Length: 156
Length: 291
Ligand SMILES: Cc1cc2nc3c(=O)[nH]c(=O)nc-3n(C[C@H](O)[C@H](O)[C@H](O)COP(=O)(O)OP(=O)(O)OC[C@H]3O[C@@H](n4cnc5c(N)ncnc54)[C@H](O)[C@@H]3O)c2cc1C
Ligand code: FES
Ligand code: FES
Figure (cartoon, helix red, strand yellow):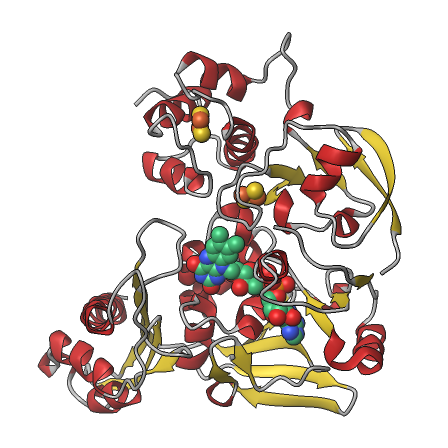
């Protein structure tokens, strides 16, 4: 049950750590890297709050072990934009009432960033399917949907 | 929601992985995409002392099409299946079932081998494997073997795999000719496990008779099920004479253990299941007919 030495890149910076194999990538980011933008809601893959990019692919950070990310590249919400320099998706969420309490927001923004990168001109149905893996208990989703539409540069 | 402690092994070859499984016996478990195993560990529904990660064994991933067989490496992700141009043509049931599995973040990690080895009765790929008579390649310290899908699924989350056996690839037949394929399921929200569903493949001969038909059912038993009675009833029959509602009814007629839970009673599931078979049958038939 020994701890394992790991090394990965997080938001462009090399990070090393000694971790128990059972530590999730989400806990590694939060506890070891102090990147607390990656939120934990359910810790079993249902809510999407913990979504990060792993080698560019959106994944649940609660369903990846930190040891599985050895040698890989991780992008968290902190790597997408800063308060002074918001990403286009963040701006769209701000302008379209895409968030209320903000708990779910990092997961949505990371998911939507990957979604629009792979499909810059989605249909309404593709947007809804793409948002289905993230749960929001505040907004009722309409503002989030509008934000994605706006970020895609396509008003309905 | 934290897993109990375990040791982690990341072999880079299949031989190393087998040696680890041989050494640690039933205290070891194979880890693929982790999209079912990690939640089970987190909820402590499962406890293992050793995890053997297949994620760094390149020989396990990939889609290889030869003749009438498509071989899918166990570590191929759901996303790779969903986006494969070849599979959309050769094994349309897989390509059409893939987008219904969870959400894209889950599909980026989850693997074909994991979904089949996990054997959730409501999962899509096991039902497709059954309906198409897929052949499952495995390897263990005792050697390699091929298990037909019909002998693989023993119960909920239970399969013919031994503790030290690894599923390495799944072989699907590519149906040629006048064929049609459809997947229909009812889930409470997009991406949820289905309450009930059906996958149908059908081939017509030149006179519009059903030459062959495969019907797989999900969410309607303790394993994925195959609607053999319904398949037999339609095979050899002129397509225009088949009542689609009767196909749905026949598909439900032999089910032994339809589950009942918060999402629906057994009776409700049967009615949903029959409707899904009817719809999938109609769509598959139309596709076979119109090309
Ligand atoms: C929110 C959510 C929604 C989901 N919805 C669906 C859905 O609608 N439909 C669906 O089908 N699935 C769904 N899934 C499950 C998903 O498809 C998983 O990817 C899949 O069930 C397991 O694949 P995996 O590669 O992640 O395997 P893992 O989780 O790593 O492993 C699962 C099991 O299979 C064993 N195993 C894995 N690979 C092998 C191998 N090569 N040889 C031997 N044993 C092996 C493991 O030991 C373990 O027991 C969902 C998951 C989540 C978290
Ligand atoms: S915390 Fe990871 S999906 Fe909910
Ligand atoms: S804004 Fe509160 S949960 Fe989404």
